[in-house]
Image (cartoon, rainbow, N blue to C red):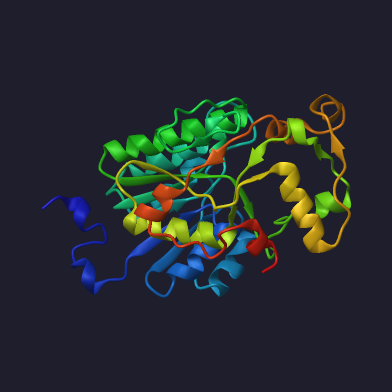
Length: 303
Protein backbone atom coordinates (compact mmCIF):
# COMPACT_ATOMS: atom_id res chain seq x y z
CA UNK A 1 0.00 0.00 0.00
CA UNK A 2 1.44 3.44 -0.89
CA UNK A 3 2.39 5.36 2.25
CA UNK A 4 0.50 8.42 1.02
CA UNK A 5 -2.80 6.61 1.64
CA UNK A 6 -2.25 6.87 5.40
CA UNK A 7 -0.62 10.25 6.05
CA UNK A 8 -1.63 10.52 9.69
CA UNK A 9 0.56 7.73 11.06
CA UNK A 10 0.37 4.02 11.74
CA UNK A 11 -3.26 3.88 12.85
CA UNK A 12 -5.97 3.63 10.16
CA UNK A 13 -7.43 7.01 9.34
CA UNK A 14 -10.88 6.02 10.66
CA UNK A 15 -9.42 5.98 14.18
CA UNK A 16 -7.98 9.48 13.97
CA UNK A 17 -9.29 12.89 13.03
CA UNK A 18 -7.82 14.19 9.83
CA UNK A 19 -5.76 17.34 9.99
CA UNK A 20 -6.35 20.24 7.61
CA UNK A 21 -3.70 22.95 7.44
CA UNK A 22 -4.73 26.43 6.31
CA UNK A 23 -1.88 28.55 5.00
CA UNK A 24 -2.95 32.17 4.79
CA UNK A 25 -5.77 32.01 7.33
CA UNK A 26 -7.26 35.45 6.76
CA UNK A 27 -10.93 36.21 6.27
CA UNK A 28 -11.70 33.38 3.83
CA UNK A 29 -9.47 30.96 5.70
CA UNK A 30 -11.32 31.66 8.95
CA UNK A 31 -14.63 31.03 7.21
CA UNK A 32 -13.33 27.74 5.84
CA UNK A 33 -12.04 26.78 9.29
CA UNK A 34 -15.49 27.23 10.81
CA UNK A 35 -16.92 24.87 8.20
CA UNK A 36 -14.21 22.31 8.88
CA UNK A 37 -13.60 22.26 12.60
CA UNK A 38 -16.51 19.99 13.54
CA UNK A 39 -15.21 17.32 11.17
CA UNK A 40 -11.42 17.60 11.30
CA UNK A 41 -8.63 19.13 13.34
CA UNK A 42 -7.83 22.52 11.81
CA UNK A 43 -4.35 24.01 11.96
CA UNK A 44 -3.29 27.41 10.64
CA UNK A 45 0.13 28.74 9.76
CA UNK A 46 0.65 32.32 10.93
CA UNK A 47 3.68 34.59 11.00
CA UNK A 48 2.03 36.90 13.54
CA UNK A 49 2.21 35.76 17.17
CA UNK A 50 -0.50 38.28 18.06
CA UNK A 51 -3.01 36.21 16.10
CA UNK A 52 -2.43 33.10 18.20
CA UNK A 53 -5.14 33.83 20.83
CA UNK A 54 -7.77 34.59 18.18
CA UNK A 55 -6.98 31.41 16.28
CA UNK A 56 -7.18 29.32 19.44
CA UNK A 57 -10.47 30.96 20.39
CA UNK A 58 -11.83 29.89 17.00
CA UNK A 59 -10.89 26.27 17.63
CA UNK A 60 -7.83 26.40 15.37
CA UNK A 61 -4.38 25.12 16.30
CA UNK A 62 -1.90 27.94 15.49
CA UNK A 63 1.52 27.17 14.04
CA UNK A 64 4.09 29.96 14.00
CA UNK A 65 5.99 30.11 10.73
CA UNK A 66 6.79 32.62 8.00
CA UNK A 67 6.65 31.82 4.28
CA UNK A 68 9.25 34.54 3.77
CA UNK A 69 11.62 32.66 6.08
CA UNK A 70 11.64 29.04 4.87
CA UNK A 71 13.71 27.94 7.85
CA UNK A 72 10.68 28.48 10.11
CA UNK A 73 8.46 26.05 8.17
CA UNK A 74 10.01 22.69 9.08
CA UNK A 75 7.19 21.57 11.38
CA UNK A 76 4.66 21.88 8.53
CA UNK A 77 6.19 18.92 6.65
CA UNK A 78 4.02 15.80 6.87
CA UNK A 79 1.73 17.41 9.44
CA UNK A 80 -1.62 17.54 7.63
CA UNK A 81 -3.55 15.22 5.35
CA UNK A 82 -5.08 18.14 3.44
CA UNK A 83 -3.93 21.73 2.85
CA UNK A 84 -5.70 24.96 1.85
CA UNK A 85 -3.20 27.51 0.57
CA UNK A 86 -4.58 31.06 0.48
CA UNK A 87 -1.44 33.06 1.22
CA UNK A 88 -0.85 35.78 -1.40
CA UNK A 89 2.47 36.17 -3.20
CA UNK A 90 4.79 39.05 -2.31
CA UNK A 91 3.92 42.45 -3.68
CA UNK A 92 6.70 42.58 -6.27
CA UNK A 93 8.56 40.41 -8.74
CA UNK A 94 7.35 37.92 -11.34
CA UNK A 95 7.54 34.78 -9.15
CA UNK A 96 6.03 33.55 -5.88
CA UNK A 97 8.83 32.45 -3.53
CA UNK A 98 6.28 31.87 -0.76
CA UNK A 99 4.52 29.09 -2.63
CA UNK A 100 7.89 27.71 -3.67
CA UNK A 101 8.98 27.59 -0.01
CA UNK A 102 5.76 25.84 1.01
CA UNK A 103 6.11 23.31 -1.81
CA UNK A 104 9.67 22.50 -0.84
CA UNK A 105 8.85 21.90 2.80
CA UNK A 106 5.88 19.67 1.95
CA UNK A 107 8.13 17.54 -0.23
CA UNK A 108 10.37 16.69 2.72
CA UNK A 109 7.95 14.16 4.23
CA UNK A 110 4.68 12.42 3.40
CA UNK A 111 2.65 14.55 1.07
CA UNK A 112 -0.94 15.60 1.78
CA UNK A 113 -3.73 13.72 0.04
CA UNK A 114 -5.16 16.91 -1.41
CA UNK A 115 -4.31 20.58 -1.65
CA UNK A 116 -6.33 23.61 -2.69
CA UNK A 117 -4.69 26.79 -3.95
CA UNK A 118 -6.53 30.09 -4.19
CA UNK A 119 -5.31 31.71 -7.40
CA UNK A 120 -6.87 34.61 -9.33
CA UNK A 121 -8.90 34.97 -12.50
CA UNK A 122 -6.40 37.68 -13.39
CA UNK A 123 -4.17 34.99 -14.91
CA UNK A 124 -6.48 35.01 -17.95
CA UNK A 125 -5.69 38.64 -18.72
CA UNK A 126 -7.96 40.74 -20.92
CA UNK A 127 -10.44 38.57 -22.84
CA UNK A 128 -12.45 41.35 -24.44
CA UNK A 129 -15.55 40.52 -22.41
CA UNK A 130 -15.76 36.95 -23.71
CA UNK A 131 -17.15 34.08 -21.69
CA UNK A 132 -14.34 31.70 -20.81
CA UNK A 133 -13.91 28.36 -19.11
CA UNK A 134 -10.91 26.68 -17.54
CA UNK A 135 -9.50 25.47 -20.87
CA UNK A 136 -8.62 29.07 -21.76
CA UNK A 137 -4.85 29.58 -21.89
CA UNK A 138 -3.43 31.95 -19.30
CA UNK A 139 -2.36 35.36 -20.56
CA UNK A 140 -1.11 37.34 -17.55
CA UNK A 141 -0.68 41.03 -18.26
CA UNK A 142 0.55 42.33 -14.91
CA UNK A 143 3.36 41.25 -12.54
CA UNK A 144 0.64 40.45 -10.00
CA UNK A 145 -0.90 37.92 -12.38
CA UNK A 146 2.49 36.49 -13.35
CA UNK A 147 3.19 35.77 -9.68
CA UNK A 148 -0.02 33.74 -9.52
CA UNK A 149 0.89 31.80 -12.64
CA UNK A 150 4.19 30.93 -11.00
CA UNK A 151 2.36 29.73 -7.88
CA UNK A 152 0.08 27.57 -10.01
CA UNK A 153 3.14 25.92 -11.54
CA UNK A 154 4.36 24.96 -8.08
CA UNK A 155 0.96 23.44 -7.33
CA UNK A 156 1.13 21.43 -10.54
CA UNK A 157 4.55 20.15 -9.51
CA UNK A 158 2.99 18.74 -6.32
CA UNK A 159 0.28 17.21 -8.45
CA UNK A 160 2.88 15.31 -10.44
CA UNK A 161 4.15 13.89 -7.13
CA UNK A 162 0.73 12.45 -6.26
CA UNK A 163 -1.08 15.28 -4.46
CA UNK A 164 -4.64 15.83 -5.69
CA UNK A 165 -4.15 19.53 -6.34
CA UNK A 166 -7.01 21.93 -7.07
CA UNK A 167 -6.36 25.42 -8.40
CA UNK A 168 -9.27 27.80 -7.79
CA UNK A 169 -9.27 30.89 -10.01
CA UNK A 170 -10.99 33.56 -7.98
CA UNK A 171 -12.37 36.97 -9.05
CA UNK A 172 -13.33 39.83 -6.74
CA UNK A 173 -14.21 38.60 -3.23
CA UNK A 174 -16.92 40.48 -1.38
CA UNK A 175 -19.10 40.20 1.74
CA UNK A 176 -20.78 42.81 3.94
CA UNK A 177 -19.01 41.43 7.02
CA UNK A 178 -15.57 41.40 5.36
CA UNK A 179 -13.18 44.32 5.88
CA UNK A 180 -13.38 46.40 2.70
CA UNK A 181 -15.73 43.74 1.38
CA UNK A 182 -18.22 46.03 -0.34
CA UNK A 183 -17.96 49.03 -2.67
CA UNK A 184 -19.27 51.37 0.03
CA UNK A 185 -15.94 53.15 0.67
CA UNK A 186 -15.31 53.68 -3.03
CA UNK A 187 -18.79 55.11 -3.38
CA UNK A 188 -18.27 57.46 -0.45
CA UNK A 189 -15.03 58.65 -2.07
CA UNK A 190 -16.82 59.07 -5.43
CA UNK A 191 -14.20 56.89 -7.16
CA UNK A 192 -15.06 57.07 -10.86
CA UNK A 193 -15.99 54.15 -13.12
CA UNK A 194 -15.71 53.95 -16.88
CA UNK A 195 -18.22 55.32 -19.33
CA UNK A 196 -20.53 52.61 -20.66
CA UNK A 197 -18.82 52.29 -24.05
CA UNK A 198 -15.43 51.63 -22.43
CA UNK A 199 -16.61 49.65 -19.42
CA UNK A 200 -15.39 46.12 -18.67
CA UNK A 201 -17.11 42.99 -17.42
CA UNK A 202 -16.24 42.01 -13.86
CA UNK A 203 -16.77 38.86 -11.80
CA UNK A 204 -17.46 38.26 -8.11
CA UNK A 205 -17.78 35.61 -5.43
CA UNK A 206 -19.15 35.97 -1.92
CA UNK A 207 -16.57 35.10 0.75
CA UNK A 208 -18.87 32.45 2.26
CA UNK A 209 -19.32 30.71 -1.09
CA UNK A 210 -15.57 30.84 -1.70
CA UNK A 211 -14.88 29.23 1.69
CA UNK A 212 -17.35 26.47 0.85
CA UNK A 213 -15.65 25.96 -2.52
CA UNK A 214 -12.27 25.57 -0.79
CA UNK A 215 -13.64 22.94 1.57
CA UNK A 216 -15.46 21.03 -1.16
CA UNK A 217 -12.37 21.01 -3.35
CA UNK A 218 -10.41 19.28 -0.58
CA UNK A 219 -12.63 16.22 -0.98
CA UNK A 220 -14.30 16.52 -4.39
CA UNK A 221 -11.69 18.31 -6.50
CA UNK A 222 -10.40 16.26 -9.40
CA UNK A 223 -6.65 15.69 -9.70
CA UNK A 224 -4.69 18.65 -11.08
CA UNK A 225 -7.85 20.54 -11.92
CA UNK A 226 -8.44 24.25 -12.44
CA UNK A 227 -11.85 25.57 -11.36
CA UNK A 228 -13.33 29.04 -11.85
CA UNK A 229 -15.01 30.04 -8.58
CA UNK A 230 -17.45 32.77 -9.50
CA UNK A 231 -21.11 33.55 -8.97
CA UNK A 232 -23.80 33.88 -11.67
CA UNK A 233 -23.68 37.68 -11.98
CA UNK A 234 -23.22 39.11 -15.47
CA UNK A 235 -22.34 42.75 -14.90
CA UNK A 236 -19.99 45.42 -16.08
CA UNK A 237 -18.00 47.20 -13.39
CA UNK A 238 -19.97 50.43 -13.62
CA UNK A 239 -23.29 48.58 -13.40
CA UNK A 240 -22.04 46.76 -10.30
CA UNK A 241 -21.14 50.05 -8.66
CA UNK A 242 -24.47 51.59 -9.64
CA UNK A 243 -26.27 48.59 -8.15
CA UNK A 244 -24.37 48.94 -4.88
CA UNK A 245 -25.01 52.68 -4.76
CA UNK A 246 -28.74 52.13 -5.16
CA UNK A 247 -28.78 49.42 -2.46
CA UNK A 248 -26.88 51.67 -0.02
CA UNK A 249 -28.85 54.76 -1.02
CA UNK A 250 -25.67 56.58 -2.03
CA UNK A 251 -24.95 58.65 -5.13
CA UNK A 252 -23.94 56.66 -8.16
CA UNK A 253 -20.24 57.04 -9.02
CA UNK A 254 -19.14 59.51 -11.70
CA UNK A 255 -18.25 58.13 -15.13
CA UNK A 256 -14.94 58.80 -16.83
CA UNK A 257 -12.97 57.70 -19.86
CA UNK A 258 -9.99 55.38 -19.52
CA UNK A 259 -7.69 58.18 -20.65
CA UNK A 260 -8.99 60.46 -17.92
CA UNK A 261 -8.80 57.69 -15.32
CA UNK A 262 -5.13 57.11 -16.17
CA UNK A 263 -4.37 60.62 -14.90
CA UNK A 264 -5.86 60.14 -11.44
CA UNK A 265 -6.24 56.48 -10.46
CA UNK A 266 -3.63 54.05 -9.16
CA UNK A 267 -1.92 51.55 -11.45
CA UNK A 268 -3.69 48.68 -9.68
CA UNK A 269 -7.13 50.23 -10.09
CA UNK A 270 -6.38 50.92 -13.74
CA UNK A 271 -5.32 47.31 -14.31
CA UNK A 272 -8.83 46.19 -13.34
CA UNK A 273 -10.30 48.71 -15.76
CA UNK A 274 -8.24 47.32 -18.63
CA UNK A 275 -9.29 43.68 -18.32
CA UNK A 276 -12.73 42.38 -19.28
CA UNK A 277 -13.88 38.77 -19.00
CA UNK A 278 -16.82 36.63 -17.90
CA UNK A 279 -16.14 33.41 -16.03
CA UNK A 280 -18.00 30.19 -16.80
CA UNK A 281 -18.68 28.49 -13.45
CA UNK A 282 -20.21 25.20 -14.63
CA UNK A 283 -17.20 23.11 -13.58
CA UNK A 284 -17.50 24.55 -10.07
CA UNK A 285 -21.14 23.51 -9.86
CA UNK A 286 -20.73 20.14 -11.54
CA UNK A 287 -17.49 18.88 -10.00
CA UNK A 288 -17.32 20.62 -6.63
CA UNK A 289 -21.10 20.28 -6.22
CA UNK A 290 -21.27 23.83 -4.94
CA UNK A 291 -24.73 25.32 -4.72
CA UNK A 292 -24.21 29.05 -4.37
CA UNK A 293 -25.71 30.65 -1.29
CA UNK A 294 -25.36 34.02 -3.05
CA UNK A 295 -25.86 33.46 -6.80
CA UNK A 296 -25.71 37.19 -7.56
CA UNK A 297 -24.10 40.25 -6.01
CA UNK A 298 -27.55 41.73 -5.44
CA UNK A 299 -28.34 38.91 -3.02
CA UNK A 300 -24.90 39.05 -1.41
CA UNK A 301 -24.70 42.78 -0.87
CA UNK A 302 -28.06 43.02 0.91
CA UNK A 303 -27.43 40.06 3.24
